[in-house]
Every structure is written in structure tokens, then in C-alpha cells.
Length: 222
Ligand code: ADP
Ligand code: ADP
Image: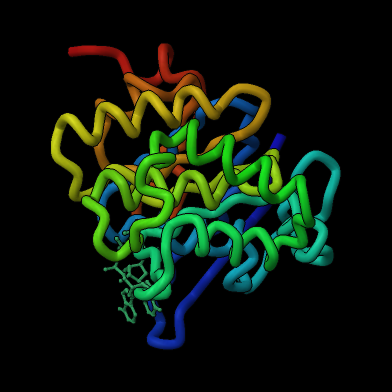
């Protein structure tokens, strides 16, 4: 369970990107829904400990995230909206590199990488460079790297942005399959993605929480 309490963030230019956000999110696939500029990326970077909030508290399964960011990082997988890769590295070499950074050793590393390549349908492309992958393959690679270390919290910032319908559906199926036994927080501005994939949703606009709750209760078809 992830709890955010009174989270505020103002950028140097005065933009109030998060305005007193308080939410509790359950495990499973959870949507963070809001229009462009709502504050989704800011919230996700804060949860991933890549950026500090000005004030507030975050707790994940009993762990105080703001005072113990290193403890959270070992339980966290993050897929940013713009994922940079070393252009000359193969898919497998990049996964190796990220696994080393996450402190995953020896046989465990090799086994995890092989099973994540299988899960994301990238085994046959393991020795190809990620920069040359299609958009859908890049996102599947992004999911594979986020899953290294079997984290209990996965944060994905608009993962299906820019994908064609076929790639989008295949990525969505993958995301649903990985949301067992963990919290997958998915930011999107597409209501249908939340309806199709998520059981719980938090809706934000202009930095503030508008509503949160079960998708079936909140998103009623017209
Ligand atoms: P979303 O992900 O929902 O599109 P963001 O978190 O990216 O929203 O942005 C929230 C608001 O904060 C927007 O008004 C955006 O322009 C602004 N913003 C985001 N990053 C910065 C930054 N580094 N400096 C100043 N303003 C920013
Ligand atoms: P999104 O809104 O979909 O998150 P943006 O295009 O707003 O994406 O932001 C891309 C990057 O630019 C992010 O790192 C964000 O923090 C930064 N950014 C966005 N708005 C501003 C802004 N007004 N001033 C400075 N940086 C910004």
C-alpha cells in the first residue's frame, strides 16, 4: 500500500505542480489519470525519489520513502516517459548494466535477464541494439528493466504514448500480467486505458487530487 500525505511541489518559476496531494493506493494496477500538465510526471518522479517534494510524507508498505530513499529504490521499478539508453549497447548488455547497478549478482542476474527477455518477447532481439528497436519493443525493454530485482512498486509514466494500436494492446496485456502481487502505478491521460487495465484510479488536475477510488464506481459509462 502506498500513502501520500500533503505532498506539495512548486517549481522555481512559481508553477505549483502538486498542491496538497493526499491519497492511499492499493496493490494491483492503479491509474493516475489527468490531462497534460496535471502534475503526473512530477508525482511519479517524486515517488521514484528522483525529485524532492517541498513538503509532505510518502509511505510504502511501512517504509518512509522521503527519509529512506535508498531502501525504497531497491523495491522500485521505474519506467520514465523518456527513457535514455546507451546507443551502442545491446538489449542484453543494457539489462546486465542496469542489473549490476541494482546490485543483482551472478547467476541470479543471468536467470532474471533470461526470464525477463522471455516475458517481454525480446529473447530473439537480445543481441540487437535497443536504439534500433521499434517503439513497442523499446517500451517492452523498459518494462523488462523496471522488473529487474522483482520490485513491489512499479511506476510507469505514459508507457503507451506514441504506440500504434497493436503495440499498445500488447504492452497493455504485459502490464496487466505484471500487476499481480505488486503495485503498478500507471500514469495516462487516456480514460479507456484506465477503464480497461486498472481496478483503482486517482484523478489529478492542476496539481490537485480530484477524486480517487474503484474504477467501477468512479468511471461510469455515459
Ligand atoms: P503531466 O505529467 O501531468 O503532464 P508535469 O508533472 O509534467 O505534468 O507538469 C506539471 C506542471 O509543472 C506543468 O505546468 C509543467 O509545465 C510544470 N513543470 C514540469 N516540470 C517543470 C520544471 N522542471 N520546471 C518548471 N515547471 C515544470
Ligand atoms: P509531460 O507534461 O508529459 O510530463 P513535458 O513535455 O511537460 O512532459 O515535460 C518534459 C520535461 O520538461 C520534463 O522533464 C519536465 O520536468 C520538463 N518541463 C516541463 N515543463 C517545464 C517548464 N515549464 N519549465 C521547465 N521544465 C519543464
